[in-house]
Length: 536
Image (cartoon, rainbow, N blue to C red):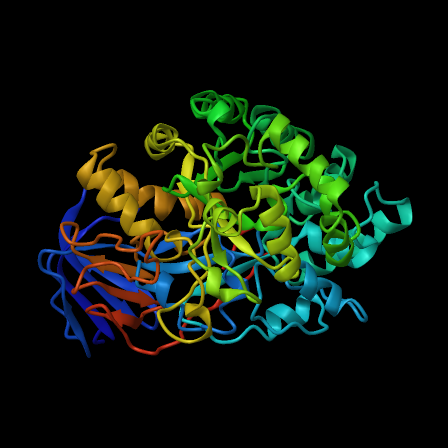
């Protein structure tokens, strides 16, 4: 029987970390039907991969593309990087469940992250069942902050037994429908009001369903090691897989702690705990502007926050807290030049400007300018914060425990999702690892880097038939020139696809990108967790 697609003459990097081999890949009915050197069977379509690397499609374990895939189903900024699967619903933020009468509450809460996404009332099963056709596969998490918001609003207290049971019921419904697990964002309200007992109760439910727990640590700056220990304790107490997402040691006072953190993860794994972390290869992070302010500023929701920011005495309190502790969850930064407007729905003319520049322009003190800006943009501004050490990134690149995740949305160079100045990681995470850290800095071999982005990630996610070049596996495949596959997106000019005119990407056996041109195909699948914990 002829192949549907034959990839001829490539340098195969199978995703296991093993050395590359020359050969062909035959695809039939969306799966890898044969691997050999050479394959003699005819094919309806042949792709010449001479001089190119052929590897499993990259698995972006940490994204927020749930905010943009319904608007941008072609997923250009991701699939052109070789990404074929995205895991969405992170940091405690998910667009479902959205309960009756609470859609506006969720929309306002997520406005800095999803300013253009239409929200509607729906439970998690409906969310999975009605997710639109997309170019990439997507696995969904249910967000703890969203559960808390639906049950408790922004209440700054532990849940009552009845409220906890309501959250558990919503979590059970999501996991029963196939959600991969639970995500938390303990760094920001309302997740920051959560005590360990609440997370243990919820993660016991996750364990019962053989799901996983993905956490944005309670603190990624001054108390990062304590926050990491809290996450490890969840793995120990609940016996659940814990993924520490976009791990970083943020703020100048915390640079150099990454080596200690990685040793803590290695020690946990040596004790039999199932703990992983992932990172993005950039020194700047991204967050809603409101989240860099002290926790108490956000209490009560957006309207209460905006009213609070207008009061001089509140601004003085904010100033004092930042002078003492640095930015919430980000630590001490060099200056306000390190905080740059990324996306600002109500004041888009300021995208790309820094808080320092805006303050100088109006003759204000930076905290006053920041507060005025949040008021004008109704709390919806998103910013980039330069706060991470390049040496620490190098430690993560070399680590066997650290996977790769963009922490980015799928966007494009046109339409609604081309607005603003997003983080360059949206366009460049995976080619940046391969070009800057593998080719330019030689921090690890190409096969090891591909393993971090494919086979190792698939193992962590329990993907049953993705992440490796194996007969019978899904034909999610990236083809690229290792000598000419480089990120071009920058902080000043982020809307740029990677280089590589011969880059070709297949999702479930369908060519989505051919020679760096998107075909328009939308063959992605919604990935659901099975009862045994495997995902497919």
